[in-house]
Amino acid sequence: MASSESSAAAQAATTADPVFTRSTVILLIACVLCAILDGYDVVVISYVVPLLSKQWSEPLASFGIVFSIGLVGLVLGSLGLAPLADQHGRRKVMLGALALGAVGTFANGLVGGLGPLLVCRFFVGLSMGVIIALVVTIAHEASPVRYRMLLVTIVGCGLSLGNLAAGLFASYVLPRFGWEPLFLGAAALNVVIGAMFMATLRNSATAPRPAHARYLSRIGSLFGKDLAKLTIVLWLLHFGGVGANYMLISWLPSLLTRSGYTPADAALATSLISFGGLVGGLLSGVALPRLGRGWIFSLYGCAAVLIVTIPFLLGTPLLYLVNFVIGICIVGGYISNNAITSELYPASSRASGLGWAQGVGRSGGVITPLIVSLALQLNASLNQIVLLAAAFPLLSTVAAVLLGKVSPSTPRAEEAV
Image (cartoon, rainbow, N blue to C red; front, top):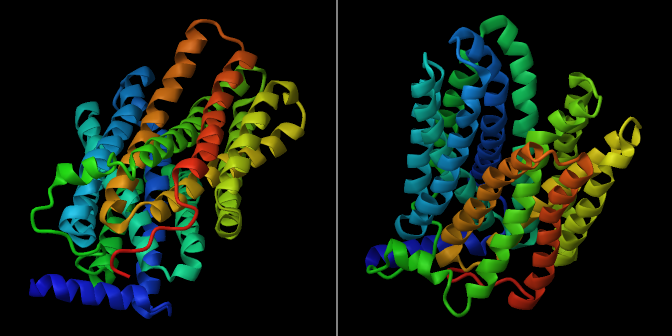
């Protein structure tokens, strides 16, 4: 009882004080670094696989499962482990996930075969699924109310920064030192971030909970009468946004090469989506607090229209500009999804709600590339494939409209505020 009162008092003190303290700044920097780590981890393996294929004398096609197993781990981490933070506290679960990520990433830099690599990628994905869900929750709860949306979206920009950092580091490190340092360095960053959280993150960032609270009850609360419709709509919002992003990032280079672009030009055109995503995240930090759900609707609606224009812009400079704007819309929308989700769930269900929403979203990232693969096997044209791709941001556009009907017009009050 005394510990619950102490926790409540500490949390109330934190949430009532809108002034940035040194600990708050360090905590938010750690959150940004986590997002960078996630973006880095998702992309860096794609630069390493061609070297591993030659070094291990394995056909390139056999590495396809390497990409999928990491995403499977990520989805399971978001769905199965992140909700534990609502029961056991943010600090314990976050530090455990960072420790798992550090060990898995370090081992990733030492493996000598495909089997051990798959094991490492699964556990690294598992840890990242927990980390990226909790990072949004922690940033939300540590930020002064006035700047909350802005700071959560800035944290989300770390994903795009991580994507870009992976390419820059790989281009410098691979020809000079080989592939191993790319993972050993990431393992060291896990340890540094863990130390930052250990120094600044309170034992629990949630409101006091009854002693009998259980893991399944936390997940079940997402489908209580007050949250069921909201949960389903948020899942659709995340699924469409993440699915569209992964579909474009995974297949656009190949589709452009198939249409006559050189590999270098196709890579440049696709990389502009990541650059646009960084800009979109920053814009969302400013626009989302002012425009709310209307901002998300505008982003995804614009993305759906622009994706359909891609076949008509082949061979023109406009394709590069359109890809940049698509990145602003798709990634800006995804980052806004996280901010609005953290705002709409109560503190007692926030980690569970974010974890499941992100897990469902990442499952879209697993499914949509497979849809394109199937479409290509059926000899679908580029026009038909972009229509498939546009369907996913269109789904998020519809979800943004429904969100206004199933969610409160003002953010939920914090239980511990």
